[in-house]
Length: 148
Image: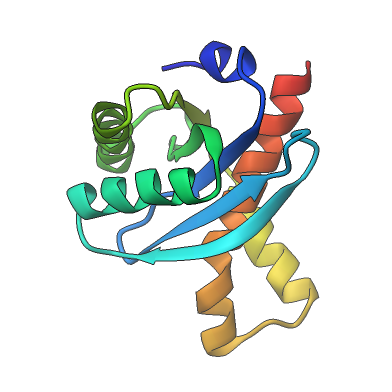
């Protein structure tokens, strides 16, 4: 699982911020310049989430998936990272022609929270968009990396 397979393709890329309660999704434009949030998947376990991600990739004609990898601030990986790696494996099993890359997602939720604070987004509305915004940030970081 690497960025190289995605870099070798042309087309849209799906960004994923995997979470226990909700999984945020974002999609790039065909030129891979901008990431746009497209919503959330309700929690339901790894199998159901993998199926929903593959379905979203197909629906949006994505040629690759970038999945956020929750790395600890000191660079180590814990149980959440293990679950994200397992989710990446499940996606790859379900869609072998869909490359999956893992992207360090440190600070993305904090960046999303900061943005929502600045825009005065509160309550239920905040809960509904933070995962999508995090997916958008993960994907935009990946798009910037793919350009290099």
